[in-house]
Amino acid sequence: MVFTTFGAVAGPNLVNVMGNFALSIGVPSLAGPFILAAAAYILAGVVLFIMLRPDPLVIARTIEVTNLEPSDKGPLATTEHTENKRGIIVGATIMVLTQIVMVAIMTMTPVHMMHHGHSLGAVGLVIGFHIGAMYLPSLVTGVLVDKLGRTAMAIASGATLLLASLIAAFAPGDSMVLLVIALSLLGLGWNFGLISGTALIVDSAKTSTRAKTQGTVDVLIALSGAAGGALSGMIVAGSSFLTLSFSGGILSLLLIPVVIWSRGSKK
Image 1 (cartoon, rainbow, N blue to C red):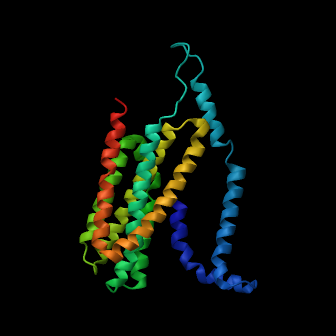
Image 2: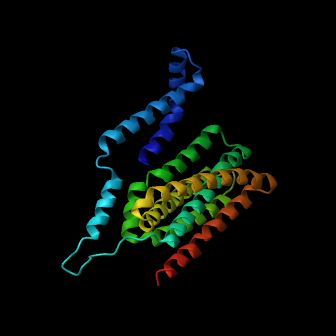
Image 3: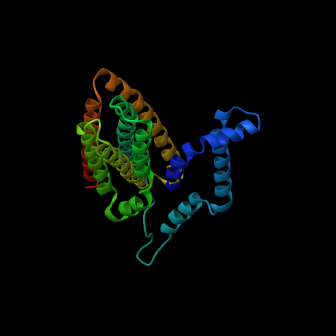
């Protein structure tokens, strides 16, 4: 997650360098960044293959078996972990809603800024802050999700995204400071939602089907992001950036009843 931020910042600055490298080996210059990406992915795969031992899935299964072993408190220390479908639905809903809100507002912010006369450099600065807020807090967010709980961080996600939407809606088009704040909060709210939602899914899914469940949710997140990006353009074209931001705020508010519903299921 941290290196995603590094790549987002370093990537654009390496376009020319990799373009020249691509030309030097006889391929189009625009292929240069893809060559770098391919090399990075291959290296990541090698690192995971060599160093990620034992496999986390093996560890999870071992822990589950250990929890089933007899203890001095009774014939079984715990019962077998069963799938909590409601928890999976809640986690997935949190992640999908935060993805839609984040992608929709982020996608149209550069268009909104250019319409108000901002330079391409200013747009890059705002998006840079946004991406940094999306990924850099991850290590701290993980600790908060464990310490404060999944529910509290999911509510924090909705509140942060709502605040970001309101600031984006009411910020003057020529205010760089407010746009930076709005997009930074947008990224932070998405981060809260991603990690708290993921934790809920991990808690709720059975070990044997956890990877499949997470993969399915990841597909839903990708599709919801694509839909949010497409619809955001239609909303701005048919109405305004203000309407889009308000719509994002309303979707953010939906996280609160979703979380309340999940808490009610535990009673």
